[in-house]
Image (cartoon, rainbow over all chains, first blue to last red; front, side):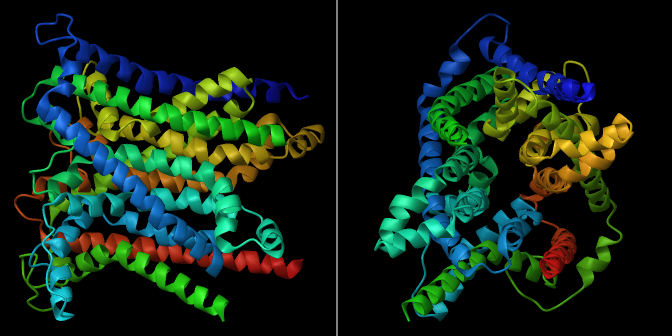
Length: 278
Length: 265
């Protein structure tokens, strides 16, 4: 074999250096800030501040938003993916095109547009009252924050799910149908199990960002409802208490790692199965 | 009959989701042509904001910063990430795993934590500004390139490279002419993904930029309380339209080539 091919793994070294310099060390630095108080003495109080009533309330609210957002995205994405597979207009590229294009409008501007759509004398209520339904008042509530985060992160659920579902061989589905399986059985026994890897990466890409998107909560929650991201941002920008901000960040990170460990483990199991299958 | 009904429901559902995804964008485009400075009232059609955009130095410089960041970070990530994907794929199981964990950290970590950690680290040895933001964007972009290129590396055919070497091509020439073309699709989508992520980023930029530097995102964030300048809607409409056009052409092309290929078969 070619000696250059044997040395191929050296090509990863620039990345290893980069990763240590800008991923690993920064995490050590933030941990150091988190474990020191303003005088430089060791303390755990910055990290434990996450259980203060105000912060804990924000954490629980973040979990509700993130959990709800993930669930709604899953419920919206499956029918969408199945419909896209069925209609098959233009294939994968067109689907990605439709989903990625909105990302090119600045997301803060889009949130401001949602604010205009959802406000009490906004576009939605205008349309509803024209239709004779009457108006609803959801501006500055958790409902409008939920709409915002679902809007922001739905494409991140749809894209991996679409890839997973469209990779399923049509022959398998047809075989099941020929053998008399009903649509629901086909979904439950074939499509859903085979889409789990895509679902898992969708969940990881939706859950964490929706937990911390403080701009969304700022704009659509009217500043009254706080996510854990808002609390951390305020510690840095307003209170200028970097140690406390770092402590809350580390607490958040530990929390995210615990909740993700389960998902990732599942993920790797399915990876392994794939490999042994070959 | 049942099939037609299912088709209709599918179309209807896709249309509803499309309306959901594009409604705020339509609102912003309409606002860019609105005479009124206030956001809610429609006072007639105007192109004033597009014209005054030409004279708005602040927005222009934020746009240049945003584009420079997106291009440079995507390009540098493309080089480091492609090399990394080639290297990682040839590693033994254990180091392969370690590398994938490293790659997943910036993707799994909340943006706000990544941004703060980078800021706390970089202030130790450099002033915050364009360069610190660039380093941060490269950091979160490399994983996107690796994840896009790695599957192509695993599928690539090394015999072509070996054949080229046997026929007397130098290692570099064989690499550029026989390996890279096989990775082209993955590299292209990795670059595009990285560019998009950099353009769209707010949180990490916000924490690592320091005073004086503004991207479009941070500039818009600063204007929320004072009210967004209508020129910003005009600029966003232009960017959106340009990208729409570019993607449409690129898409049309690839669909065209696919059909041509099928014709040959």
